[in-house]
Length: 252
Image (cartoon, rainbow, N blue to C red):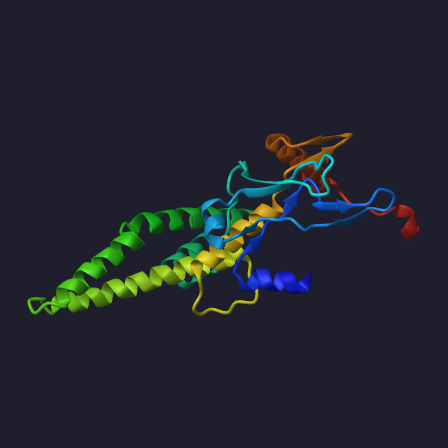
């Protein structure tokens, strides 16, 4: 099985998690032998475009193989949580804004709330300022390079190409660092990376971590709203408990 997993990795394919059961092939009556011999292998490009793909085992009836259904699920994750990206700290404008809200005598909770608010506003303005998209810059560079290949190209075009390429490279690096952090890969070092690979890894991790059903009392629910409500109630109870020690243990 390890060799097969290595083969899947070498072919740059992804084995999606199987829902509604762990095995797809069964044999025997009194002593059942089972294995997962049927599966869909997906390319990263498909995962990037269809991040909610799910493969589900269907009851096999009288056959020894269970059919597998591949479908695009509907994910309801609710509001996006705030996430800090480490490349923000490299920007002097962000550093100065954070220092400004951290000054003063306030509790750690109030300070973190202020940092969160200023961070969200800062990244929003920064992205709005980046009017020119990556595709626009690539097209502009291409047009200038085609013009530069002719004799009538002014020398100013070369300087503009250099500036555009520097900006484009910075945008690529920022995007890659963001997706690297989202993918939570610990074995990569800063260097040449594949953003599409990070995107696929992040989508796959989200798919594997998604809670599709939950046992509530004596029943199983698949309703995303109810699943969120039950989980929130559980953690509210856990974090609102006040731990205490029996007084008798201190001989008071």
